[in-house]
Image (cartoon, rainbow, N blue to C red; front, side):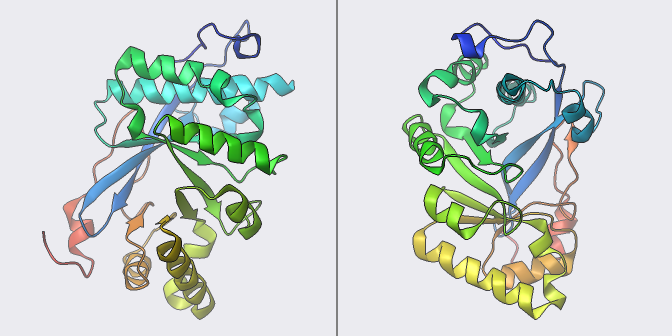
Length: 260
């Protein structure tokens, strides 16, 4: 399934030759309950080409970024419905590509209505790949999204542009710890102490903390010890192209968790 944007405001008009994309999905799990909390939609080419290939196809014009952001949202929602997703759907969004929230959500809302995907199961991740040019504007986007029942997450926290300053400015519902912080934290007192601070902060302000890039049992066990219950990474499941991967029960069984 590929996506071309529906008609809307002038800024929302699709390019004459829309980029063909598809999606892979990776589970974000609530480890103690052994349940999938959400599936993150990850852009892929129409034959499963990696995200890097897709970005190479983007036009150089600034509006190309906007069209790409909109196309990703619509494609992710349509695929989620087609696959019968019953969890939250997590979609990455480029904050600098959103001009006016109420206007730029038209394609998102229309796609959700067309496939009857509940709005309160949509989660938008603010990516760290670009510097947020106007924090107050992005804060306004988050507030507008909440009016529709959407949740927002700050992605890749602890790396790149996802700084403490941005976290304090945006105040999202969820924070995703970058994989470079998670990697090998069970063998690194500095990483372990840093994640422990993140966990205390999240608990204090009521933010849900998610650890990205969890690849080993040891990392997962250490995260649980530190109070981080939600995780994403190859230890649980790799992204599935146009499918919803299941988490093998053995992955949970290997951890220090009581059976439900």
